[in-house]
Image (tube, rainbow, N blue to C red):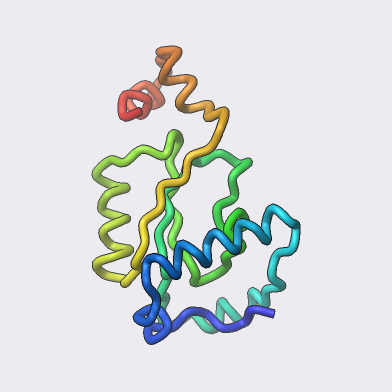
Length: 138
């Protein structure tokens, strides 16, 4: 059972390749429905004084792609930035920079998915309130 969060020393010892391999191994566990058991209460307590996520993942808000579960990650493991269509703007870029430059993450992943409603809406030229401006970014 996973009940200890990544600490600064562990984060410092990781490489981008080892992190990518760990995420891909977690994805295999997800695909095989063999997720790790997690003690969430212990992880919350273990991260109250700080967090040292190993990676940041930019993903779409799509509810069918729960990023932590897809990579079998939990509290303290990864940052996740989500926006419809998983595009980058100033706010998202600032979040990615914070993750790496301030919090020490060593890998940035952009995670796409099939049948993205935001991308379809952008291609179809949907215009509706704030969605119009957002879709311009796609």
